[in-house]
Image 1 (spheres, rainbow, N blue to C red):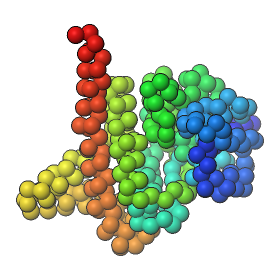
Image 2: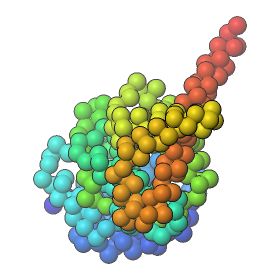
Image 3: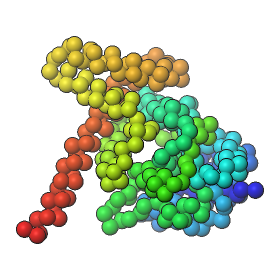
Length: 312
């Protein structure tokens, strides 16, 4: 039988940890081993997961974030997937469609993640460590998460899991997104924390990663509908600034049609108010992603200039 080791990074003392642990221990077909990494306190999430993985004895490592309350059947589904598919290297799931009550911004952000992962079911070219599993021998062979600290690459939760998935895919590993493997996200978002995460925590490092790896794969948040939506959001803002009602109105209509299924989800799960608020929040989310482009390019140009300057 395939054995599971759950690794939970908790070096930042998360207040949701007790709920996350209770869900793990109370699940059906629970893991044989649970490793909680709380020290050292200055260790980033990738480093904490690497530390836990080195201590693990299970055949499959299951990474669970300390703010995720796994569903009761999550481990049974993970175990079954690896036992019946020898070619499977890694698997990850999704947040559920009933996030912990945290206000309009939290509902928007968590349900957006759910929607994107539900739409992306199947073979993947990325990885997600919020609720993701990988064969331990494959993980160790890859060298684990990138925790290089000389350039503070991923000192906080960022795109270290995406980077791992890209390396795994490049080496021929098979990754599956199973949207039925779910957990409830307990994180509470504010507009400020969402924008900061989208720009500094994900947008800029994700774009740097794509440029470094030379891979602009149209998957999940990089899919064409998301690219079109981002471009439309920029044009919508331009229409507002330039007072071109036809441009603002046309692009707004396009955004509502393009993301209609997501707004319908917000309406079903949280009501009309959440659906209405979701439109401007989605525009902010996408404008933040667009802002990452000039910031990243400027950052890369400055780094290149800094390297070349001493040689002149």
